[in-house]
Image (cartoon, rainbow, N blue to C red):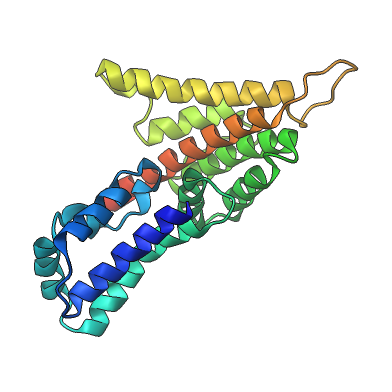
Length: 247
């Protein structure tokens, strides 16, 4: 993680230098760019212009037109790189954790942020609590999206119903697609939600237990939190994209 952060920081500094009058090496730019683009876990926070500018000549044509002064160029590049660098700087987190955290921090919901923080904090030390928090994360994301689009969901809906309502609003229900591959993938998302609900009911601390009860290990919590985080990120990204398309 530290090495990737250093490579990303080097890329930022190289671009700032090139944008402010210095002739940087195109080969080094291509190498650093490839390092960053080859990491799927940070794709959501890689600056867009890094993806679209395939060499320094293209970057120069972009930056000189968009920003006329050196100060403006520096500030733009710093701002664009900040999300990626912050994700990579998060100590103790996998890159995917940081990407989800960044997306959730942008999402204006204290319940969503609290559930994700609890899920991350408890994975190793409190697997049962982490599983409960993973489900709470998805419940909060679904409710927030449904509230945003003015869809009623009742007083105490279960997670599966909440997800189905949310998926329908976001056009993510398998029945809303004709391509078999999309139906299969989206059906898999539904199965993940149902599985998380079942895992929580079976293993988590949300229900009383008898004398002989299955006790979750940290690997169970890791699975639940990772699945919930990935699906929450997908729902938030889809909701955001639909809002942007409508404005």
